[in-house]
Length: 536
Image (tube, rainbow, N blue to C red):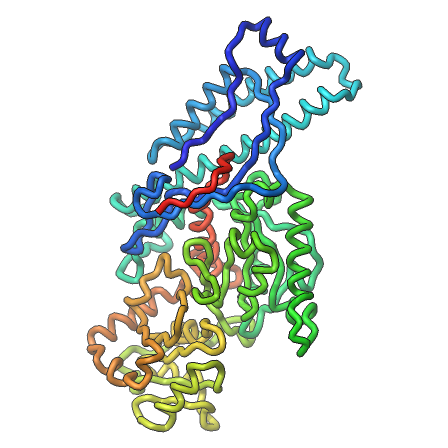
């Protein structure tokens, strides 16, 4: 992990100090910048904490600050500062160190008291608003902000250490859920990380912006996850904070689906109005608050399930490049970055709930090998229909279901549910397969499946390249009965992570989205290092 740099004053006698403070105040400009820490994803898909120097193959990226942020910091009470530095240095230099928050708090009180005394000596008349007094006030505000950031980063460092230790230690007891099995890359690490998220994560939701484009979204249809997440985040009493200085991440509460409906001029093919709306919003919050500028958006996130979500994110350069983008259409060919961005599932809630959808028979009662029904949407489905529509009784492929045949009933009778991409890589059929107990078959290119930083998709799904569509039956028949039964049982076990609940339940889709965002925040360290470096 990178070292934190603190500003210190030189050591002089007390009279010399007073003279210096009266004649030559020490003014330092501190600029906060994002830096990706040694937290990352290992080659075995488990997580680890590196040394912050790329020693374990972790990409470490810092962006030089080029706009806004920063401020004046006047450091006094040297001895107390050095004592606090030692406490914090121990935390950032040791993977297992635990910061004594009370000790830091007590030291900070001493620093503040000393600064107050110095201020009274410099300006005994509080009503006299001269330049020195204004400078002192500004310094205290900036110093308070810096101290809050220190505490946040120290807490995140403790979380990184606890998660790293969980890989080799005993799993923490949890009476409600105990993740275990090959469905997880590392169940113990995921469990520890999830518990740390529950203990620490705080999200600040910007209140600027008016509905329906902001603070609103569809809770039905294929874009339902936009509205569901925004709504739940707005009323969340556990993870949401009203104090931005306590926040680990900042949510930009706009809905791309609502922009397409209310901002985009239908059939105009002009994306300009949407771009300007997003750019204006980012500029507004960056001018009103210091948090965007101090990290260039690296601790901010947006969420979109609409096909235009990736395109919308590039309306502002730092939003697309630095911010966490939670997207249904997680397409690496469209600049989706799994280390920074979040893939979450596309869920088609036609009625706004999952009532009557979840559940299905055991493997022995599933007589159909494979099933798909859907229109010619995108480049992959025509190939699937060309090779398999009405060609084989074991592989039921339809553009339109025969009258009187239930779509969900067909999925419940099927072993493997085919999930080809449409125009975009995401498909609601993946979650529909989970809900009905059917093993999903992913037929797509460049797709990053949801929560794949935690879930081992190969243990409960089948991935078929588009080029192998003609060999689909042979591929599925090569899976033994015992292997299929194991996969089907795992589908039922991990289904909870894709369920939409009202109110949300632990480990459901809402919490899994937050957990993915939490992991990306652990990848980011915000400090005063303004160097640009990429270590591999």
